[in-house]
Picture (tube, rainbow over the protein chains, first blue to last red):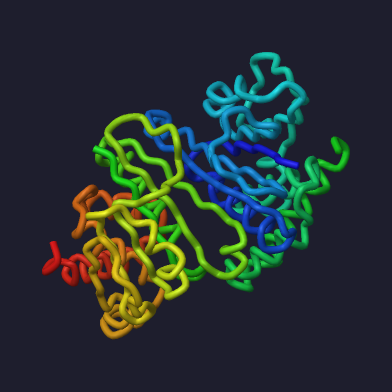
Length: 179
Length: 179
């Protein structure tokens, strides 16, 4: 069992934070191994952030994802740059507010209104990434929601937990129909 | 020019955050390339956090550090686990409050009182990692202090900037004698 994931978007969307939370949840609460990596090159200067996560039940020696099973694209630039990398049969998650899919990919493409829903139901863009993570773990049940919550509880002030749990649940609910 | 760095410590010390700030400063403000990666395995469950950064003026294809030129150890466990990896002639930075060096390494070992100084001069452990970064960039001038400050200014609330700048400067001052 080895899942290769790329989360991509722009700097302020919390893509790197979300990927670290996922990796820590897998390791600390699911007994799995994980690596997380980000490369910064010319794309980073242009604004596209990319964070790679590999989750596996065996040792992982190479922490970079060349061809992901799971790809999340949260900006048009990220979609244009990375959508060609996905493995045939993989799963591509995009946010409809930021991405207009322009080409066919050889993968299942799930388009959600994460940003719009978060802004309507919570009104704070800061939990956009947690909502995305809720959708992600519903589409690919690598990590239980309780494991994500345990990691969050150790990292964020307790005043913010209710909002984060709500964002995670909204994401889970949105992805339920696409499981 | 290629510098391979491992920052190691425990979860709450901000090791991963510091390494991401360094990587972003190198890319966004120094025109370099960088990768940052962390592996979570059995050590992570035991509490040792490790974050690898490679900074280079050419492309970087493999984002994991096997043998660092620069190693930072902020807990005894991190020191015991990783100090053997350093390249001959490398530089090992430790915090005296957390680490009692137990063995000889084939590297220059710089022992600073980062934690104690931060607690005495600022009183907030949250900027411990930024102070460490101030010492780090003084020992190895890959990235200018102004570049770190530019990255911080985009990431943290403006109310906290003065404290972070002060922490960075304290770190620079402490490492000055070991340049």
